[in-house]
Image (cartoon, rainbow, N blue to C red):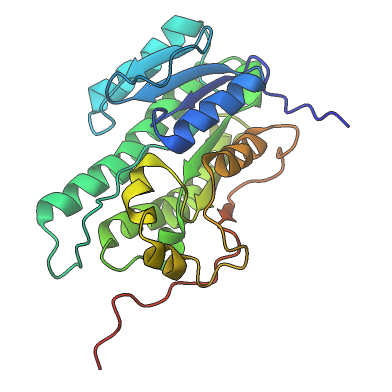
Length: 266
């Protein structure tokens, strides 16, 4: 059986496209015939070779830069963005409990992961007001959340807070707002656990860490970027997921929680 995702020639903007999940998502959407704009903060080496793609740089913390990103996407493809995949994000590799975390780290993580998401969604909805009915028919926002947003993550409270805000603040709010702009518009989040990406590479080299991370995960595997990208494409599809709205979809191998680490002092 052949499934039509309904994404052929649909304009998809993927932020953080040079990362593991981002690049895999770009490749998946390309295979489905989508029109693609790939965002990155710096010029990447791994996003060459995608025919016709718009590759645009922007600092998601900056209002003008985000607005210019959407202008560049429209100018390159001569069509409005219909699907926004908010995939970019930072996670500090050095453990920092809240008691020791610097204000600079906290503010920068929220600026990138949360304020950046706000600026992108606002610009997306504003340009969607000018879109054709055909462009609006495929309208959706997909956030990339995290198990950290559901279960928390000790020593990475900045990251957990930013992801929880996307998953439980913006998703249920925006799914009620987007329909005022596009009557069939949808907003959902795909929320991975640990994924074998460059951002997680150093942590995943530690076998003991991986054992703890998977201790409550029945499938006992670290996800690949393709595992996540395929779910992003499915939820973006207006034909396969056209009645799925306001959902947090956990793509985490069935994780039930986290082990305490380091051990609690008694």
